[in-house]
Image (cartoon, rainbow, N blue to C red; front, side, top):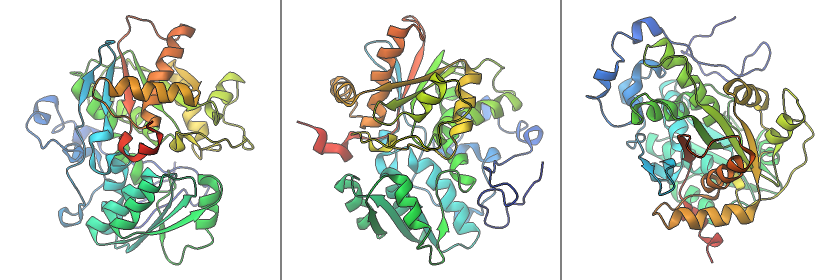
Length: 366
């Protein structure tokens, strides 16, 4: 396995084009990263510094992201609410770390294709760090998110089609910008993995039996799985793992299709579809093979839900004070279907992951 130093900008592997993943000295890290030491640390994702990229303190770009609450719903389900994080989306985790590392490496201009929230997070953290940002977005992106990016000072280019089409256009207009696309650089994953560390901490390291996660590009799912593996190396967890379940829209469910048909990866020609959960409109995820592998290894799976059930789940969660994004609410709809299929038990401890706030999707509220 070939290694690369963190002292220069990195994308994918220059030899094979695959995803690069950060490794750390876990034996050294376990000396200081302990359950006891965590109790005394700042309540942000930077509390896990031993297993985050090396960044000079003056280059850390932060708005206090991380340690979002885990609440128990009336049904007994747990819900972790990243709608309360800066920019109202879990994307802030990845961009906080990736933009910080980009600044540390001397990069000045950053670009990303986005269905919405990754773009607003990049725009936000680039503004905070004094860097330029350009965002390529599908025309279907909610105008609230487009305006958010503009307000942060980013240049927004809207493209007909899906996030893949936005990425294709972006690659013809790089103009010296550094590509921050999902898993096309190694540091957004490092920020996203803090989701797994936090879930473990907030359940007193007694993990739930299952985690249900809305999956488009899948970085958060892969990040949480990486975190669980790292925590075992650090002596914080044993070898038991929760079942991981991906929830997708019935209109765009390449992961569900791959699992249902016994494939190792989604069909590269999987057809596009439209859904109110625009973050789930990723017909050909770059890390599809890795997502499928994690779901199978965990003993979990994937489920698709229709838009009407997503809207109903948004209303249901709002009645408990959680204004979830359609992507996050899809996890509640997915749980209902998983119960019906017998994939999870009614008495099983299950955690839903709400990845964003519904305040960006007010056009869906009637």
